[in-house]
Length: 150
Image (cartoon, rainbow, N blue to C red; front, side):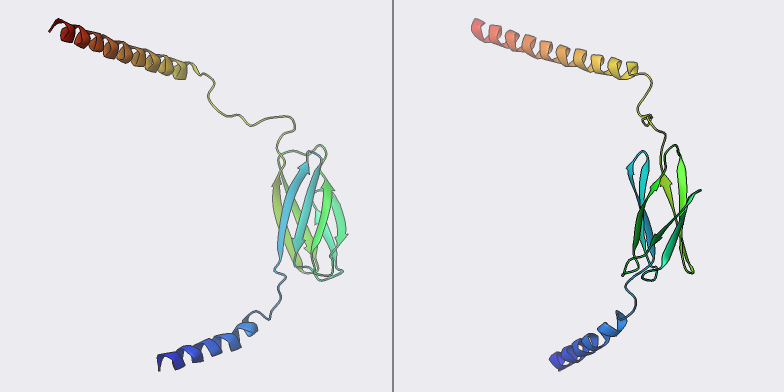
């Protein structure tokens, strides 16, 4: 009885599964990749094949979606810094992404201005370690002398 129920449910799953995935696989999405300080690649999906895609980020750049509805193009960001919002429009679909360009030539600030507290702490640990080593050797010598006298 259990096997018949299992086979029946498996049959229904196989029968109904293709219908659940028969829709459009091209879910709209947009992404960006910083190529270098002057170039950002914008890519996405969800447009109709052959449709014109308008990319606006101040200036406007146009590209054509491929046979799958995907698009990809490089945009020139020379001289731009900070966060850049790029909006891609194809037909009724509008997608946006924020690209962080940073400041040219500037590295992010990390760490502390002063390493003096850390240096002091390290010196204290070295001194304590040296004292512990000295005490253990001194105790070892005293034990050796006591054994020699006996």
